Amino acid sequence: MKKTSFIKFGLATGACTFLGFASCQAAQKRVSEVLPNVVVILTDDQGWGDLSCSGNVNLSTPNIDQLSKSGARFDRFYVSPVCSPTRAELLTGRYHPRTGVYRTSEGGERMDLDEVTIADLFKKAGYTTAAFGKWHNGMQYPYHPNARGFDEFYGFCSGHWGDYYSSDLLEHNGQFVTGKGYITDDLTDHAVGFIEQNKSRPFFLYVPYNSPHTPMQVPDKYWNRFKNKQLKMHHRDLEQEDIEMAKATYAMVENIDDNVGRIMEQLVKNGLLENTIVVFFSDNGPDSFRWNGGMKGKKGSTDEGGVRSPLFISWKGVIAADTEVKEISAAIDLLPTLTDLAGINTAGTKSLDGISLMAQLTGEPVSVSDRMVFSHWGRRTSVRWKQYQMDYDGHLFDLHADPGQYRDVAVEHPKIAEDLSQALKEWKETVLAELPKKDKRPIPLGHPEALYTQLPARDGVPHGNVVRSSLYPNCSYLTNWTSADDQITWDVEVIESGDFEVTLYYTCSSADVGAEFTLKFNDSCTTGKISNAWNPPLVGAEHDRVARGRMSYVKDFTPLKLPRIHLEKGLGKLVLQATNVPGSEVMDFRTLNFKRITRE
Image (cartoon, rainbow, N blue to C red):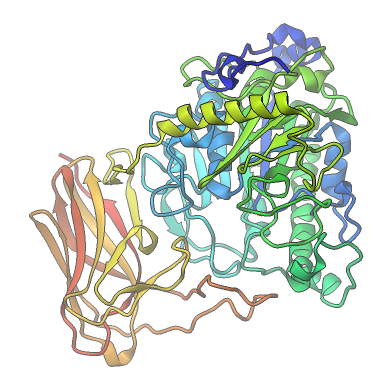
């Protein structure tokens, strides 16, 4: 291995040379005839091993298996250890710390506003764009998907959903709507409908399913296949495996497989298969210990089990069936690869870390032998080069000879160990340095191009007695609001002055009716009073196949319209506080929804 830094590989500066479009005559001819559609399907917490085409006999995924055979399958494809970073890397072609993403909630999931997304590029090229599912890269406009290149968005912007059959606060282009049925089926209904509506014009369709992420909920049809089944393949350390969790996951993946089949059937029905690039992958490793090819680690880990994902890319007539790509690749490569395949200019983007894989997909000779791929989360960073991986502790593994990472070979390969250690050091000093030490980005409120701005409990800061319903903020509500001294606050920036109608979503027992409160921002204020009881039961437990851990259950919150409030442009703290507490609690709080009425 030559002694050279990762910067020379073009990974830090985007200096990689994109393969010319002339390198693929078949693709060039196809694009010259008509722009190819693109469908990107992303699953949530599905490990590399959670497919029958990966060798797992515990489940059957014929539709995804067929997708893996119909085009290219990638042997060593890497994503981030958790959700929002992988999504940011797909969308931007850049390592997630560069994009401002460093957490999965509390604002750290947001991509910086100067990032150009893959949807921006396809939309600029004349495509109709849509995303149906879990966004997890920012909620308030202009972090919202409708501001990041997507004409259509249906789903939710937070990191997880509390009940897959209770969907009253899903959204369509910023407005609350009620979902229909099991959420994965519902998202597919929208994807299929979008294909039908846009069959005569080029489209870019992103389907980020929120399954098989917890809660472990799936229709009876699928669960009945597994609830009494004896699994034949297990995690390498059986004592760590949660058998019921594995069964529920497999049931959810079989549901995903049926829905992937529905999308493919719609492409066939509309005669679009030969003009559509289809991509399938997962956002990180499995969230529980189960069979995963003997790899070390799971979700959250930068070891193989946490970041190795299946990747299949199919384009009938252009990418040969049963193409196998053995070189290492990563989520950062998808933007340059898909734009290259579609003949779309990426001018205007920031320096890309990813490279185009079009040559590998179309059988053209290419060398990427010096390429390194980095994985990072929290305080842990690993790097891969050829068959080698250096983990966050500096151990070196030969993944071809030792896929389970059992034996450190640094002593046997001191030069490789030295070079990879240096590359890790330089990556941390440059890429991680782009993350500010403190996130000072306020929550935007009242953007002039957005009719609605949602401020949920997950983005609020509880004060006093108020506590969050769950350890995980994403689908939580705020409860134990017992005193007039308690507050819920948001650090916001009003983007443009104007009048707003505010709707608050709450629950309250009959014994606590009568609580009064104020909503203040700088010199502006509006008031409200809980006049009607609304105390529905918690839901979710009746649908769970495995008892959830520290994720809270959810309930149906009711809307309360407040008098209009005038907000002046600028920074400040939005404060929700009670002024009269006649009972033991004020309310349980879920979200505020601001609707712009006037502009200045």
